[in-house]
Length: 427
Ligand code: PMP
Image (cartoon, rainbow, N blue to C red; front, top):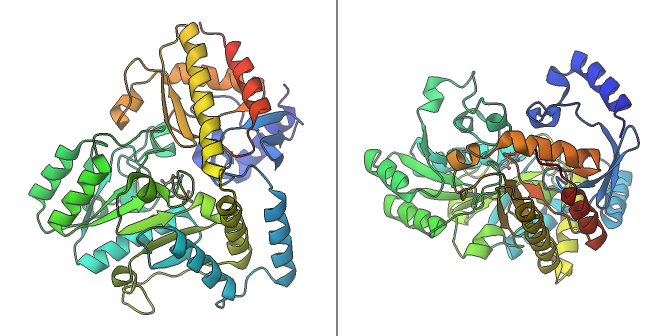
């Protein structure tokens, strides 16, 4: 494959955009090579500026769960666009999507729309602090909740990939209120509650982590977090930016049967347009402005184009009764078949998977927290990434990320992907 145009476009972008990209992982810095500039995407495929085609396993980092440019979502966006892009006033559509989500997701009475997952998590923490009157919160090493200051402490995703999980610019004053624990280590959480009695407003957790690669909760981790929150008067925040509407329509709450006090959303909820949201019970959500005193706002919050794309996407999922069964089956097949090939090649590996999220770690040991994810063979992942990329398989460009399977990936795409992996040269 040739990457001439991508290469030229990257050189030009580099002059005007920091690092040439608007979000760090896109720069391919950890895997090396030139980032690929896309020009279009449809269904399971993306096409780059040099006309190379790829089967896409990122799917815009999760939002494109139906595959790219679904015709019905496209039509709905076009229809809305004819009526206006943004009014800065309330619209009926915002209530329509809010009602639809509240009726379909467990334990929430109200939902507030924002424009990104970062905003959703940042606002949820502010609300938890306002509600409890406490300052501190617990997050887990390797979890990523967006780039708001208080989350950039041992953060996952790009922050981990680039080795700056603790970003300069985050003040010591901010950092002191973020308490850290190891994912899946309930004893560390117990210790934190013991040492900071009456000070902890909330625990925020990715119920299935996707930002240190895919890491699953083990040994009733989520149930035990719920219990500790109840015992200590803290709120449990499920960051379902990745898992919401992906693992089940009701997200991880539904899948694991654990109630969260606040839930944050992003990605799928916007159908590919910039949307985030946070939701909870009336007694908590009533503290938000304008009803309550906790301030939160957004010029483009509830934007009609974004709401229409989101609602149409959610309705398409909801109306397909086999949706999750199918997408999970595809992912299971990939997991199983890739495992067989790597075993055959005697390549040490672990595949973590939940629903339509999965990661291949080149590691002999199980991966259940950030340290273990970091100990995987990332150089080998980079080699794997590039060999697949050259053959038109687009994986996330970092071993700390999750593959997101879309409903457009069918047998043909799986067969092609496995054929390419069979030819992977391990040296
Ligand atoms: N939370 C989680 C679990 C995420 O995966 C992400 C983004 N990948 C965010 C929050 C932040 O969302 P955004 O990039 O839309 O700000």
